[in-house]
Length: 174
Ligand SMILES: [Zn+2]
Image 1 (tube, rainbow, N blue to C red):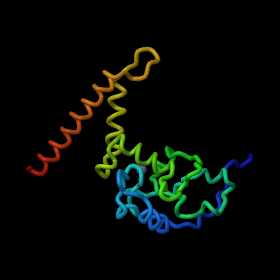
Image 2: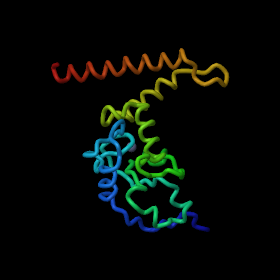
Image 3: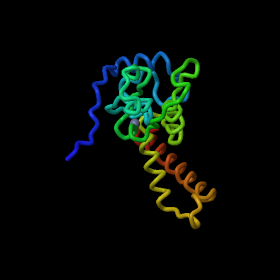
């Protein structure tokens, strides 16, 4: 049988080089990780997890051009976030001052959906709760979830978060 697995060339760029580059060049504002946590946390969900070197460009499409094996073309993502990351090339990629790649735009936007930019280690918990609530709803025909239903989900999310906060305070006698 033919082996369809792609033999990827060795990535010379190290995680340390990626972190060093990102610490210097990424604007932390709205980014889910602080520069000081980039070595230990997933850039997207903000969880303290093992990370993978995620290419900001479709490396295979460029025949593993060694030009892209360079720190600015990587971010560090956990194995859950990595497959969800965009894999597209853009003209202005990594050019100062527009140094945010499409990957960075996705990191910021998708992390914000579940408040990963506010707290570490909450993204997946919030996201799972959201889908748990969404599962309890239906649609009218093929229409997307309507405004009233979405408002119910948001209210329930808020109640749930307030409950978490109360538990947190009780546990600590606050
Ligand atoms: Zn992640």
